[in-house]
Picture (spheres, rainbow, N blue to C red):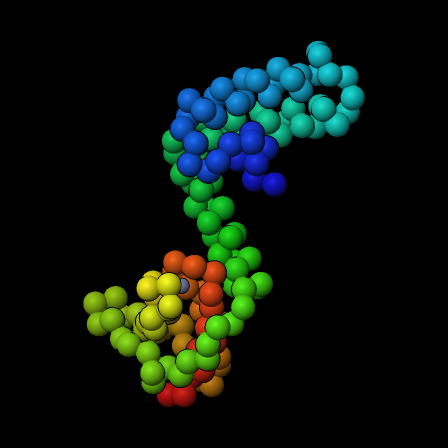
Length: 138
Ligand SMILES: [Zn+2]
């Protein structure tokens, strides 16, 4: 459960909205008011979430971790929409990345230095949850 879910706010919520939500939830679950142990746990989670999300720097760091986790989850669960050979991908000479267009108009991108002989790699689209299998035919 993410800190945003704990506070029941969207990841794009403003600090003001998050604070409102924090104040009302922590009153509701405060151990002085609510004596069961589950409420105490929830109260702790609310405090933790607020401590992270109230500061711009820790919130940014947390958002980064969250998006990393999401990408990892996509890598494991998304459908493979296509199988592409390395020789069919475009090379971006500036970044050294190989890319292939996705139907959502974003790109599948992979750092060409990650390619190993004969090893296939799963690449997730930068804009949606589709992924392709890249077959190393070089
Ligand atoms: Zn896409």
